[in-house]
Image 1 (tube, one colour):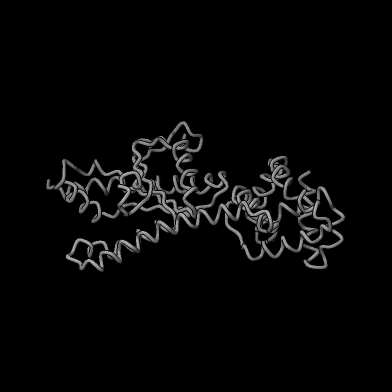
Image 2 (cartoon, rainbow, N blue to C red; image 1 turned 45 degrees about the horizontal axis):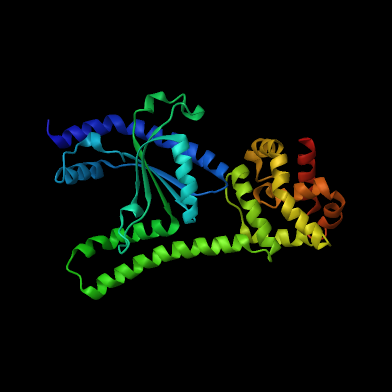
Length: 326
């Protein structure tokens, strides 16, 4: 049997298992990664047959290589907003999967080189993990997890269309343009992280400071993203119900402890109403935590002012929901 036919036959047997495994791993990451108060994009794909054949043939020119050496027959991609989130995801992967091999692309670059950067993990499911205990049929299958930022992802996608041109005999001015372009992606990642941290540390904008405290908690419990413009407007209005600056500061200082103290109750509410968020829209925005906090600590303040700016039925709905969980 020739090599190509052997790969075709092997992949026809393996592909269904990798497709099932892809759904399992994707669902697990989607469900659990938000416990870290981040919400990256997660995608998965099984490698197509032609790509497998081409990769095996290409690698064989460099070293001993076969179909069984391929560790990216299934690929999971996690795309995060900021560089610092890559460290959180690195820990998450190592805690929840068996990592066979790790490749940090940035560590392979000299100080004066610029190139594609991301983290790659050759991994297997860990069947000691409760969520994977029933999937022992797949515990031997190795797959690749790639982690990158949005800027790294943008560069990767763009470079596919110009990388072969770099191998051509390009004029120096064009090579310099490509080099400058790549440096901008790296600089953008650094600057976005710096700005993000500066905004977190900004003590002056109470609305923004409060929203940044709440967004990670919202990702953790709601497990999806929210409308930031709506949140900024709503939080500004609700904060104005508190006439004293000291009351606003107390809310900001105590809201995280409030969420932590009531975590079991909050989890129960979100899990119970997860299929009915369209009926309770306040559950789809992080300001729900402020409303719960004020219903507990300053009920008359929020109840007396609410109908000046919002639909009173929305508050009654959330108030009943919170009360039913007592």
